[in-house]
Length: 312
Image: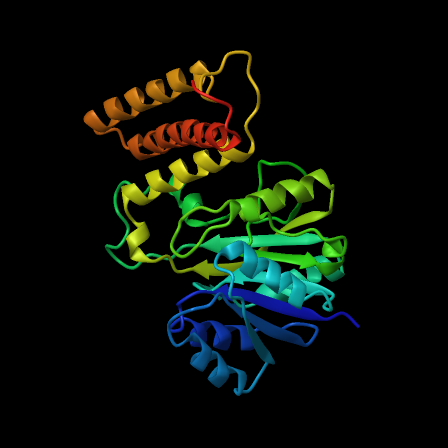
C-alpha cells in the first residue's frame, strides 16, 4: 500500500509551526500520511515546539535536526529520510495548505501516475500591506505560482513548479538524484536556485510532471521582502550563481567576462534609470533585469579568479 510523507524544512520559525502542523493534520487524504520536519539547526524554540507537536493527536510527526546550514542540506536530508515512502510532498515553513491539497497531490501521483506534481501557491496580503510597485508580474518572485484553473502535463520550461508546493514519487531519487549544493542558500538569503535546477533536471530526464490547481497552499511572506532592494538583491544573486556555474566560453573575454555582457548590463541599467525617472510602473522589473546582468558579470569574474587563469 502506498505511503506518503509531508516534508517541511524549517529555520527559526518556531512560531509558525503549530498552525502549519494543525492545518496539515486537518487534511483529508486517501492514505495515512506522516509529517517530517527537518530543523536546519534553528536557534529559537523550534526543538521544544516540535517535541510538543509530536505528542499531539492526528498525523504522526517526527523531526530531525540537520546541522549543515542551508536549504540544500535540509532538502537532501528530507529526501534521505523519506526514501522508504512511496510519495513525498515538499512545502515550506511559512505556508498553510488549503483544504484538499494532499488529496490532489496523492491523486496525481497515484491515479494519474505522475512522477512529480506541483500546485498553486498564493501570496495573501493584509489591507494596505502591498506596495503599489509590487505588480502581479512580480509575485512569482515571492514564490506565487498559478498556471490556471485546469490540470495539465508539464513538458517545458514555460510552466515551472517549485518546492514550495511539490510532490514526488520517491523512486525517482533512488539513483542518487539530489538537490545541487552549488545553489544552496543560508538563512534569509533570498535566492538559492536549487528548486529551479531540480526542475531542469527532471525535464531533462523526461519524468512525468503534472500541474494540479487544486493542490494549493498559501505562502505568508515576511514583510521585509516587500522592498525594491530585496528584488534587486534576489536577481543579482541569481545572476551571479548562473554566471559562476553555467558560464560558457566565448571567443573574446576579459577576466572571464565577454565584452558584450558588459554592454548589455550598462544598457539595461540605463533603461532602468530612465524608467524610474519617468515613473514607469514597470521600472522595478527593469531594475531586476539590470541587477541580474551585473550579477552574471560578477559570477563569471569570480569563476575566473577561482580558476587562477592569470591577469586580465
